[in-house]
View 1 (tube, rainbow, N blue to C red):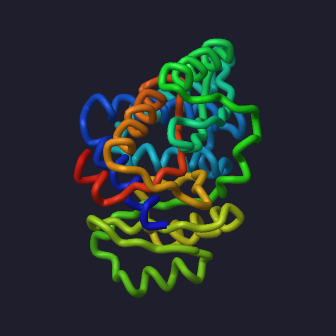
View 2: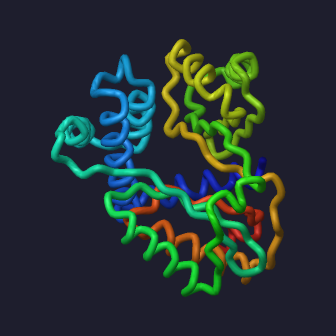
Length: 246
């Protein structure tokens, strides 16, 4: 899981610049809109909305923006966002899983297919790569003043599968079935994660040379730059050498 933890750290650092932050806010607004449409505008009775709001706060999203997104979700005439997933192979046998949220399926399919084709990848059929990834809950928590040893014990009791500490952040991973119980434990402890979400973690990673890996990262960024793309998961190993090169 160390490679996954490094990737989470990279994404957090990338989100620090204004352009990436704007993209992150756009994604969160879509998540809030869907959460409200699915479960209502009251966070207390809507666990998904409560989680997205926590992520919005973790990304330093202004309260006014959060409230506007909630109001947008309540508007019956607002865009009807739906979630789509795409699976395929990138060069060097790297598997990619792309999650999208869109109000225009035709546009999204066209854009995702175009990126696969542009970079010599192959878009597969739905479910063709699911066996290569596990869905897990991933929490990124600022270490702050937490008693690390005591906190880790609390997380293990709540179902944590893996705990990694890097750059003053604790990354806690759990099986999907324990995501809710671990989120509840954090609420009981009064600990707000910077980010908490279900991710697709590859069962086995492929190691590439730094130059080849940088080319794969360029493709990943091309997907992430598309407005309809929410997340991109892959099975390439994120090495220390790659991090230094980036």
